[in-house]
Length: 355
Ligand code: NAD
Image (cartoon, rainbow, N blue to C red; front, side, top):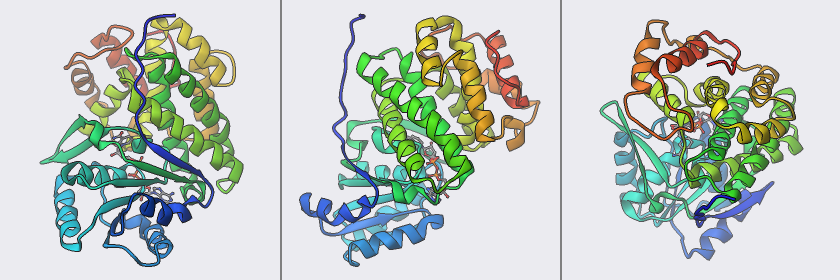
């Protein structure tokens, strides 16, 4: 076994169905009494349900959380939190809402209780991405990690099948890259493989029946494990590509991860034979790249970036951006091969390990 280092992130997790009801006790345990609730405009109903659970005892409700955590929205929410006398923030939603909770918490020191409703995994990470003047910056700080995470499977039942599928593959991507991270370790690898197995078996069942409780339980459990991977070890080619593509061509987050994952894995395959073997088993047996292709077919997701508005003439610029800053990857990043990877992802081709 290789030498390794392992750091556990100190998050407290409450998991189950109906666990939203545990929020009053959790706030009491933390001696907090004036929460500012956060949501997107699309999830006002869930935020109002949260207010009911707290018997209306809240400092306020801010429902303008937005994709990519724009600092203008954060500043508005900060002013509101101060005026309302909030002593903590409670975010209910996906990565966009959790991002706002992190942005407020890291600026003010207010405790952050997180109630995730997608599979993106932000709740388990000390990472915050923010946009200002059209530029996205990302930072990592232990203070960004939410203190308590309440996973309530019931809240995920309303996540549309298509978003469940892409959000779930976004989670799988964290675990895939954790297996070949520069600072990978056996504990995180265990979580990664378990997370991938849980999502690979549950996501197709959710697409068939979005109201399947056992499938939703398994998917949220898998997403938690995959989020833990993202929060614990460094990412590589796949995440760098998605960041570059999403930021430069305004492509949707989870959908971009879904399209790129099989191609990024195919690119890295020759450099990670052991990981490919373990991944193959986690994806249900056989070749891992084929396993991801089969999973995506079952999930009936879009396979081409062009379907989200990326132009063919953007491929060269995308390749340029993708190789412009050096970063760790198990296989050296070669521009011409990366260009072909992006072209295949743009065109919506099946991934092939021949790059
Ligand atoms: P999202 O938070 O943007 O949610 C997408 C849409 O789905 C929103 O309209 C939301 O209100 C709605 N929604 C969410 N849950 C729902 C539910 N259960 N029922 C009905 N509607 C629901 O999407 P996301 O993919 O979770 O997050 C993406 C953002 O999170 C990106 O900005 C990404 O960069 C960030 N992110 C950050 C990290 C991190 O570690 N910092 C990790 C993953 C994602």
